[in-house]
Image (cartoon, rainbow, N blue to C red):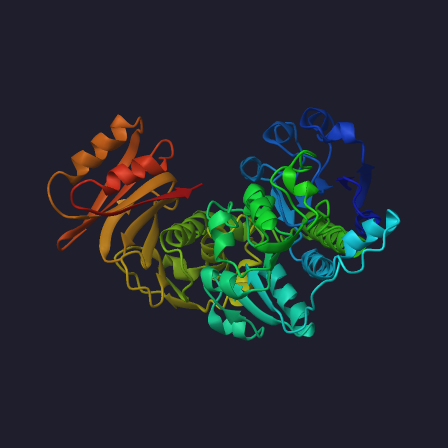
Length: 530
């Protein structure tokens, strides 16, 4: 008999499904005091599985006290409250429930847009104060207006479908979605600047990334159409609240609707909370009974399938394969994911992809390896978990065509994985990787340049003209800035060279700029590979 703990006031559906198997004992613990990692670590030892929402923190401290734990299930998408790396080292599968709250969040964004257009919250507050401000609260029609969707992922796509029904003109900006994929939704794909300039309403559905932090700022607002209305039900850090407040005060922005904030709950003294043209909800995007039932149902079924049948579904840190096959392909799986992540970090643009397996690698079921490449590639574009099951679906939604070829003939290496971005003309469009001695991963070619590099940790990738002094200058620059070189690999082709430098700690932007300014340097980029 397996034993599973359910926490965080999860829908009763989860308990019903687990207990119905007849093979799982369920303990429901909604005590907030045991959500603390110290307290949780004292009681988790006898459990084979645990299902949580967002409140319970499963840290390395908790995982160190687990003797029987096999699976952690997150009833939702984000796993920020789970130390996935520590769970992986412990051999614990981390699963999530992607898509369970997609419709709910999209509907909330549409609801905010409609409420914003017709001043519904302000009208409610006015009537409660005994006023009748009909003229002051006149709104605008939705029909025929242009809706700009920044981020055409799962939620953005549902927003587009709903907005089509409202007879709006829909434009979107997303560097990782093709025009064909957008066109299938009756959406015109534009650059961010063009979207800002033509949209009457702008709704944000982007992940929390370095590139998206404060993307709605003073400069962006200046590019927007006068009278624009902004909706944010994605991440609080996307909008600079001070700059939004200034845009509202000047009248350039007619109104805004915010479900999320950089700090939650927000400080009551924040100026934006007092502006009459802004409406708010306390992060209710995924808060419906239907959504909570869906994610509870999904995660309970996934946990039961894993514990009883050894089937892995929607795992964040493992592919959906049996343990026996996993033992055989694990080194190649890790290599494939790192190759996808590496090429994704180096080439920040959508491309079709061709993956070729040669030699011994071709004897495997290569589908999990292809999933791993896509997981690494797509994971470099988003802060949301991308797992081995969902990666092909996400690639398809973004209009990425994936081609897979297999050859038993041995190339220059006994086993080889080749990843190529079709149509990419620059030097980083193709990467080759192999496994030495059945366990040591290596990158052996980037573009046309052969080398022998270990894909791990923080790495600086340097393209340079092949002239004397480059290696010395790079080493001196890193040393002067307190960065220790763990490994320095160089490859050459004609008059060009490529350096892959493993460093013990990440470099900041100032260091990268110094390297770029050195003689004979063509480019310098930093990547991070776990």
